[in-house]
Amino acid sequence: MNIKKSLGIRIKSLRKQRNLSQEKLAELVDISQNALSYIETGDNFCTAETLEKIITALGIEPSELFDFGHQKANDELLVEINTMLKNTPEKIPEAYKIIKAIVN
Image (cartoon, rainbow, N blue to C red; front, side):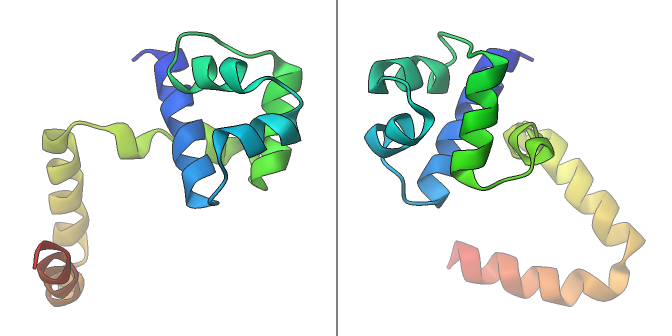
């Protein structure tokens, strides 16, 4: 796992979820838009101080920034989903409805 790349993808994802442009987040964090772009692409790593500012600007807990579970390979995700459903078979009909709604 490339931590710089994973962290950058996560920051970008969280920024977009909050409808923030790179320019706005960079302004809130007090770095240049180019610096933020390099962080989001994994080409550069930021200081602990900048990480704290990003966490504050995004309004998240530090642990949420390092939650890279969504970046797993499809095969890994399918195994996890299968395991979760095996452990809670009563949820299979609900999961089916959700997946069907997403696919259609």
